[in-house]
Image (cartoon, rainbow, N blue to C red; front, side):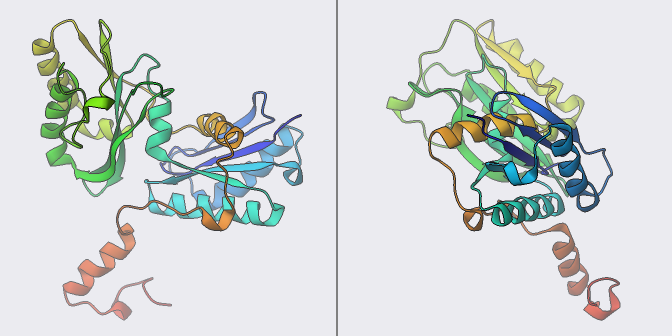
Length: 285
């Protein structure tokens, strides 16, 4: 029996959609950087459905990224996903963009730090770790917002904590419980993944090299080239949630923004500077 799944990923500028019949990926499309989500999304969904020989009316599940990420992209993507699920009367799965990145981390990773560019000099971050009897990596703490200025210092401390034999990873974010500690392999891997790391450029290399110089041969740091959540990852995660019965109605799927939209913040800043809303083009219509 086939399970037709549509995935919608719009948390970054490199958004994508994908479709599957449950046995494999049938078609995918990636949004070109700079393209408008509102102009791209619906035509590309129709395009990949046609290429897959699957009618939208034959879909069984909609999987979508709920954030954190770019406000406009998430708003358009989630609205499109919910409209389809409501119209077709099918369930949804909403996934965190940072959870998706963690799922894309090196399969040998014991820990992963995921970071998405939040613009305005900030990042959305969360850290993940392996725990006993759990498949893959699980959320250790986050998500939260951190400034680019503070992130470099934070990263150095985070790597140091990950290398600690006694405390494990992430106690600078959340106190480690002894029963959650894991036995370290002979050589452990910490994966840094997400487009947020691109914002720091060579600073990341400096921090990582300084850490490795003192960490010895027991710890490896992998800086992933997989910078954005992928719609094909949503497909596999969504199908797994469906098998576990972890699907929901469209009305219960909510976005994770973590902060106000850039446009709203810009309005508040200009208002505080003494401008009337009617003096700001596009604020009132």
